[in-house]
Length: 352
Ligand SMILES: *Cc1c(COP(=O)(O)O)cnc(C)c1O
Image (tube, rainbow, N blue to C red; front, side, top):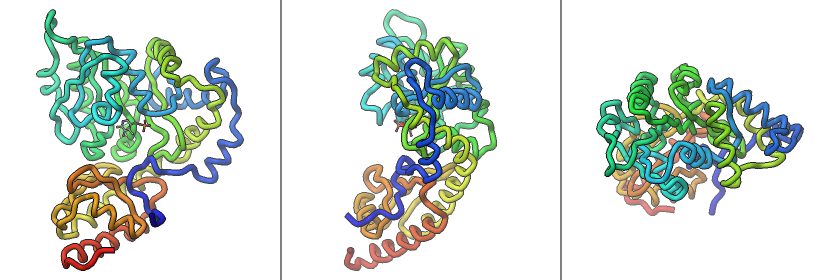
């Protein structure tokens, strides 16, 4: 396979910068399970401050943040209401069913964002027959929704309806900070109506490992039991958590560059005849290459042969994600390559 110079397949492909590596190498460490790792403790403080929550925990992945939060909130046979595009529903190997014995009630929102009125239709009245509606999940930004931003007012409305019916509220904030830099709304404002919320360090923030889950003291106390049971309680994890500390200090503001690069990419792609681009709010660009007479898989192979990679959603749908390791110049380069591929595809010229 040719070397991939421009990897737009995911913001998880970011690698730690030399400065981040130096910071990690020098990190003070201790036993995380005994809360004696000073770097993890520092990260926890930073996350509590950022998200306006009482307590937090460092975890190996965002998937484990969702798994633990759902496990704290739900009992077997409970129902979790989320958008039909939810990451937890599609990409976590059936975690809600396997780990909590919970059902997922999918709502057909708009670009991954459901309304308070839709939520009302999903909440079950008390009954001996129905599963018990227990939790709502909001994904900020919505991944399959197109990197779309949940407006603060919509969040407040759906959380108010959930609260009125005694449902707990969880935010999958894998890319919350992309929304924060796009709107200027502080993370703690988005997080305020939620019982639990997490952010990912291994995506656009550029750290190699980890995510942090935050909530009330009692929520995090209960979450520690599942962190142990799921095998996510670590030892000298300060050495990896240092990447997250560094990322929060140096890589938050710059997410604005990723959002801007995504806009440039979207505009450029939209100018190519045969490509249709979905609206772009943050760093995810979903587009359709069907008009070029290509499947997304074929399109990606043509890109890969030229050192560029996107991800294939299925059929003629593809996704390009901007991040720390893709520059504005590389976006221009990508667009030039896409234009070449489009010309070749439409002229029926031999493909390399
Ligand atoms: C990536 C992602 C996750 C999972 O995070 P990992 O750190 O890869 O386990 C969960 N939710 C959303 C919306 C994501 O994009």
